[in-house]
Image (cartoon, rainbow, N blue to C red; front, side):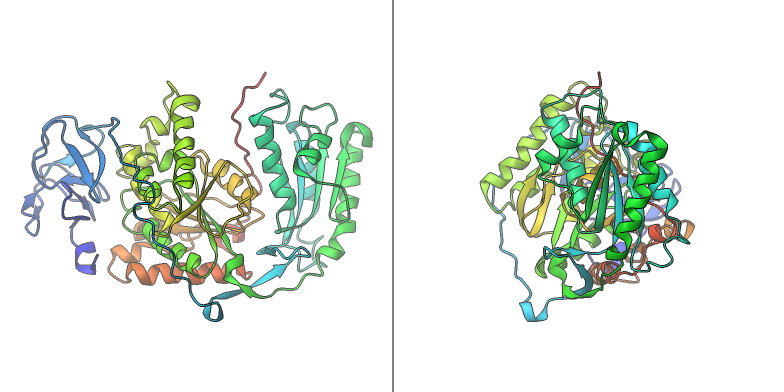
Length: 512
């Protein structure tokens, strides 16, 4: 889409669309001669305007994709939003593999590199933390107290250690002892315990919880050793003694953790978890497709992009099945969608059943179909090579999908457990988020929000809307920022110290 289209007062995204998007606030009576329209209502920036008369029941099209149906006759020039848009199901053609095209890889000799930390097993880290993991909420205070003892002053002699961080959560007991809820919790904590960004790990339990350390170790094939230690509070002597023992254990781990050196490695070692939150009507025009362009570059250089947030691809899932590498992969995605629709969210007022958050609505998104249209763009255009359950280890290179809720801390926690060593997070409303032990980059969809929240935002994709940079140029800019951040350049969230409280495993079972 050329700059002239994007800088017009109202943006037509596809020739077949029956709505256009207001680039700025458009008062009632604003003439749009290039579209043959005059606004009949006040239309806030990022919101939709009827580009022609739309009859009741007719599909509303944005990017030539159904985002809802007219709840009443909508005259040309009208403000189009949830008040006159009906959310209802419609038939979608999954057409497995119909649009599959193999990736044109960059020749190995020409592939990008970054300065990473190579672990003994060959995996590559982007950061170098020591982690303290609780098995249960009952040991949450202990793991936090251990981590908090290691202030910047106390770590001054270990400049290559990025910090000591606690991973506490609110479950681990009062839950099912077997089955997917427990398996999922253990997959998540096991994924963090093995994560290359953690040079060493302490696991702390209370002793009587359902999520026993022994069960965690057995399922996740973990064992105590030089980089992994465990404490049971009831055996160690209680709260104070466990905190003291944990502090001493971390002190013993610090010298070895500090010995790391960054070396030049291929960009194929980068795995990016893709997130969006606090979206707006510009998300699908700037930040999300720009991030998708960056992910296309990363995949061509051998790296991996993990798209998640299953409720936020609902309504456009057929665009992924069409480009799946195999029918089996496409069907794995649809199985996850059906689980959400037919089992997990039945009868509930949740996102996959149409309702988006108030912030999304204020930003111009009428329902989940419209949000999904933009959210899906973060994944770029390369083939879908595999689909994973929450926190399952990602083993394929390229563009993959990991099932998760749309709630960003829960979704990103699963991506990190799956192996993401970087998070890229688009936002139109101004989400503030950090993700220890991996860096998180925030991509703003519009310039006014970027300027208000510049301390939190890493890159302004609103420059696309301002006509200052093309989509391709922004994609390259994002890719280069990813390389620099993976090499050690600190993100805005790291500068602000975010990420200590965002560990949030998905709780899918009952609490009893």
